[in-house]
Image 1 (tube, rainbow, N blue to C red):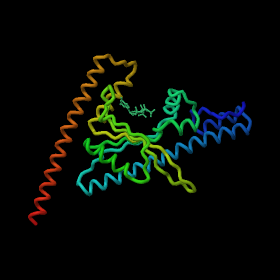
Image 2 (cartoon, protein in one colour):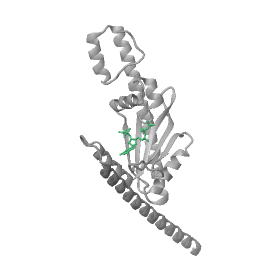
Image 3 (cartoon, helix red, strand yellow):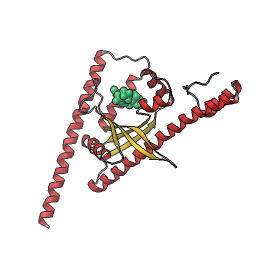
Image 4 (cartoon, rainbow, N blue to C red):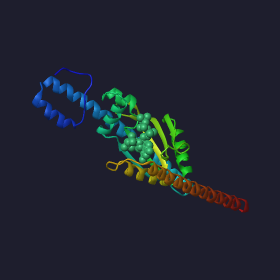
Length: 245
Ligand code: 0O2
């Protein structure tokens, strides 16, 4: 077997090593091992970046909670994209399964989903995060302002953050999806329906799904207005108290 510059990885480092030892000479095994190690190192850097960003979000949530007496972030979900999923995405983009192709073209290896209480919170949290001087915005897609044709709504950010290793600093990309509880509810159910076995949506079903997204967006809007009204009432009362003091 000749040495190649690309390698397909579907199993764990240990499993591959054992299988290959039975089939190949030591040099080839060594070469393969280095390739798989480099892959798992890269995945581990993405995991570090994901942790960094999750901490930033938790800090923002804590500060908002001290300042405004409520938490704008209700849940943060994080995940590292599976190898199969990475491979599928590279294939769909017509790219080889190599470390370079992965690092240069797949922006959502590390992903965070931030579920906020109100629509206003989505934008406040995004703005606060992006204003930090070690966060670089790579791409912003606002599917709230411009929902997908099926009704999907979320604010997607691809950012780059530094991670500090023992002897180097690396810039890593992380995808953040910010959405309200209502948007998350719709997206989760739509995902379940879409991935149901042998499922194809009829036009009628697609229209119904879109209608549900619109109803849920309308509820979001009403709750957001309510929150703004409550906040401005709070602010007005606070001003009165200060004036009377
Ligand atoms: P998973 O399992 O969530 O990781 P890109 O190649 O990155 O430039 P991509 O991946 O098409 O473009 O980006 P897009 O459409 O902005 O966002 C992709 C992710 O957003 C999806 O991840 C979903 O998590 C979510 N998403 C986008 N559209 C929809 C939708 O219509 N319904 C639902 N439920 N989620 C959606 P993946 O890659 O599908 O997988």
